[in-house]
Length: 326
Image 1 (tube, rainbow, N blue to C red):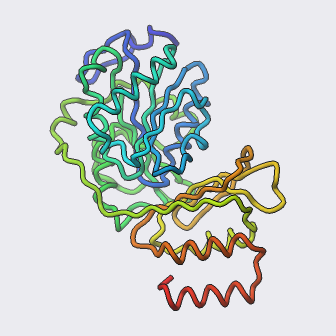
Image 2 (tube, one colour):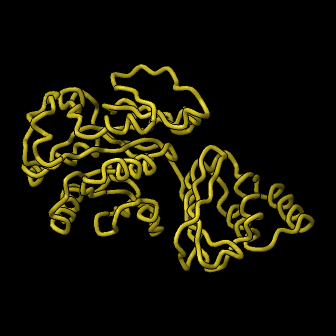
Image 3 (spheres, rainbow, N blue to C red):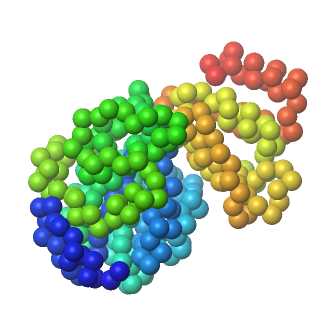
């Protein structure tokens, strides 16, 4: 594809610089399919040499395990929110990544599901990046099956307002909602993936008109780690009965009788999947939500490490529900 591709693009209100590396911000609410979209782009554009910047909540070290890109081409921010990264940190991270991978042809930035993409895009305006990168577009994934979220309307609205392109996900479960937006709306399919890179649709004029202040609603995270293996039935019973206050969970878990493999856990909207992956010695699950009972959740996770006993299990669950508002 090479450098010539930039000459063929029509600029929005940015001057196109041939030698600059394009950047696409992949934003979207918790569990809306950002990482899946990035993996699809990596697969769709095998000739691109992608560098990826992503968020990490605490010391969970999970995000890179879900990305199908070499680890030395990924930088994780441990702050949990790129939009609140200290001034200059994103620029330093990008320069470090490009020094480590000088043949990079495209950069993808994946903020957390609660991040403000306006603030992330503003961080790319640092002087030291001026002649290195060019923001191509802000792409936002829209989870049709779980939109809107009543506890985080402000964050969702902000993400949708900033989008140059909206990618509708989970359209097999729900139709695309009616939205007042200037963004181009695409359903997620292999053909539309080709329309997401090198678009030159980012508009400095439109984004400069937006309020740049970034604020978050109160949210809660809980990380559970164990060297023990989960009983699959017990874990699935837990996941199928999580309270609505738990919006998102993801992790890597070890199950009984699966010693050679671990499983990637994805949970959103009271649906979950377990996908086989390479073995990891420690199970780690990250839970994100608002005002859920961490102690009750921890107790139920401990139960899930044991083979499910209907009599004992239901008795403990009833006790937890009555005493801890689960």
